[in-house]
Image (tube, rainbow, N blue to C red; front, side, top):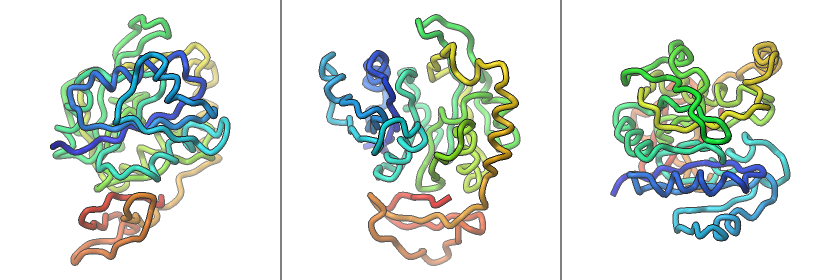
Length: 268
């Protein structure tokens, strides 16, 4: 049996898009996944999906703990709960191509972080462009944005080798911030050059606004990346802990401690 991929999906007023998004998971050629759907609007998405005959034992439903707390907080709720060794992020209006998880899991055998090219589509499903199409190649933090552009959170990662949490205090660039936190414990990633992710472009999104560059730079100056903290290795819901195995290293020095049978939970 393959390793399980926990797919983290925050949902805010996603009743009109959630079914198509979940169907893209059901169509995956890699069957060992579980969806963690976190409602940030108080919605009952189990009922929304059941109304269109979507039900699966791999679906898990959570609440963010409030209304409109934001995607970062919603994602963190799931990241604190999952125990699967692999994790991926999928927004409630985007879609995975059928082979995305299969190809990502293959690449995770050698790299702790995997990204992919994407197809940008309109809200009506019209093809707009492909982004990041190239040969498969390893990337570093310094080369990532030259290849991936907007694909910072369209990633799959091995939580046993690197993990983190999203920063809810950031107003934008949260995906890039999260990716850089992962890179601090894994110096390279693998980029899959085929478009394996459908990204839905909204007319009112920040990336479409006239002052997007100014707003993003201002946000990062106001919220600098804090120094790395210790990577804690714990089980589900952070119960208990485990001591470092012989010869393990402290993540606060840029290395990772390991612990048999546990997944990583970062305090960065």
